[in-house]
Length: 209
Image (cartoon, rainbow, N blue to C red; front, side, top):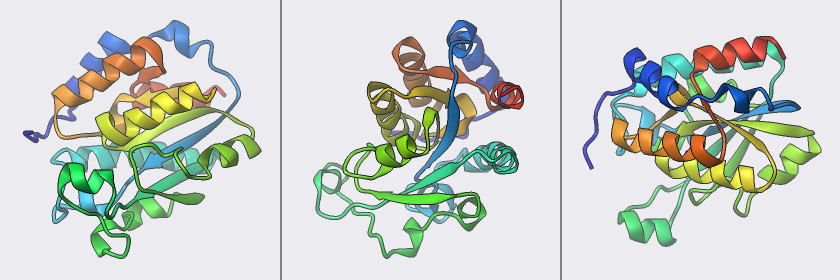
């Protein structure tokens, strides 16, 4: 699968034009939390094994959202992914070892996290304390951000919806290998699972909450 540096302002504007649905955003109420999925050097550091070329643009955009959330008192939950000897290891013919420095959450992101949850599959809810934590905190709406758009982020967004959470899926708040994979996820999420929106418009909405 090819990798490209695609996360441009033009791409974000086009995706929002195609997939943002104001009538769905208007229905969303309740306490909000942000989930930052797998913000690890393995994907986001130029030396990482699965480095994503749009990482510089992505990190600039996501830190703006996280900084706003921190100042507004919105909880940010980070996940750390690692897998050894499971189905993902077989599928990708690779392992992400928990004690490898490349799987550490980026320090520039870690400082925003109120809580870190470890996972070993695409779904951040599966065999973790995420759902219990969100419900104990009274969270009704989950903003999905992180890595990768079409794998862990989409899988988690779909399950969040099935578990009764409102889902917001920022266009430039997740990242993957190329624009084709990214748009496929946005199309599916917008159709049946959550609100697809730019970080810019999301910040405007959060200001009003």
